[in-house]
Length: 472
Image (cartoon, helix red, strand yellow):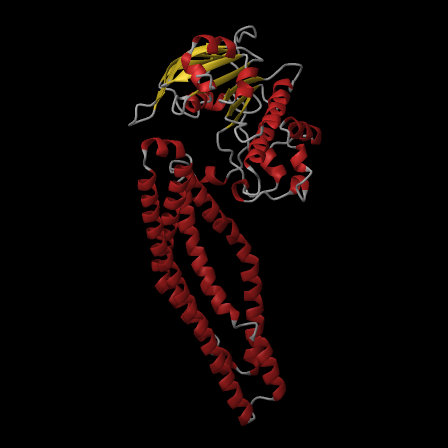
């Protein structure tokens, strides 16, 4: 399932399901007041009071008659929205691939088609919703009119006193909302089934109890295999390969050693396989062949092994949320104020923080829209650093920074010692400042390692490196 579609389902359906329990005290209190009002009104005039139940019965009948169609319309509307969200997320995550393939026009046309389908489904759902609740509301108005007409006739006939009429009208306002509330409550209860069914689609084989049981935010970190050698390279890749289905692009036969405490920069042209290499290393892409070792011991499940506090990763496009800056940095991790300040300082975010109206509590908007590109990257860097990982993996982390800020960022990251040990850094970049600082540069070409060495060595012997660096 596309990430965007899953996010759409969580956003709407989880909110629907979690909101439902809040109905119960409201409905319970309204029903209690309704019963008290009906008892008192029946003592004044039983015949007039019975008219109240006409819109109630009619509302329930309408709900049962129309709700099946409404649920189908709701499911169709939600599914259409999911498809738009999912495709849009995948589209934004594959901008470079679209440009390389020249498929921008086709992608936009398909997005337009999905939006047309969504528009038709949403209009159909809203029309059914408004028609049903309009009929319910008009039934309520009709019932009130009949009650007031009968009350006026009884008042004229002398069978109802002015005081009884005043009390009757006062109590009437405690009953007129109950029919609408009952109809909406029944409909919302049935809608839970649709929402829960959609949520179960995210984990179709999981038992129901697993969906509602408490789960740790961060599972236990995978243990290092016995026999790990602290003197061995921190990471070794042996014949690592991964190819994307249908295109044949990816990485092939990557063999690489990364010493502890080193700064390794992976560089190359667009499409050379740099990002794929990082994602395969971390287990975000399942390697087709090859092995990954940590201090000489094989890593069977890199997706479980390479997690904080062992490692932290920042992708090309940082994922930020419409929450305070503090929450975007911490994302649930428990960090001391000192650790948070240190991460912010290392990420060179302090000068910007002083300009934010509410400091760390400043809302940054959807996807961090209120931040500049450089602020977004440094927020992502702070998020990575606050976890104090042994291994830092980052993809084009400083591309939006000015030269001075970029130099400060890498100087502070490279010098951030944890337990008197410099962190190991693997970074994708083409920026001269980082290439000059690197202990080793891994030059990628068409999914393979073309050369490895320091910048001066590669510039002296490799035409591809000179072309990338701008010396040819």
